[in-house]
Length: 142
Image (cartoon, rainbow, N blue to C red; front, top):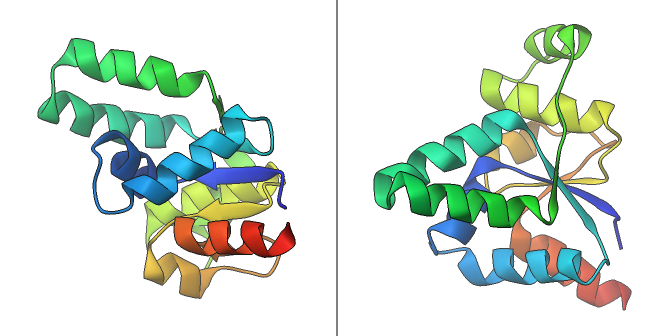
């Protein structure tokens, strides 16, 4: 099983807002809590998640949810060179490129996202899997 997973904004929003992908997202977080995997994201993803949580709930509840997530989530970031590499890549979506290349530079094993365009643009060094695909692979490896 992969040891390091990058979680994008749609994953965290599915989890925290209990949207369609909630149960798979919750199962992945349980694997992290058990120490089987390490979860990573960027400040930008935290920012996006916090924004939508605050719009849905209150600022206080949004902070509580984010702080709870931070117990099992490592925040990574990119430097100037990584940003240049991402923005010079063939990925059309700049936000996706910045997140993806940050994960690549930090040697993340798998990028977790339900973004179909990102999946198509992925390179072999870091595949993009949906939460369900990751869980299926994890079950197959047991």
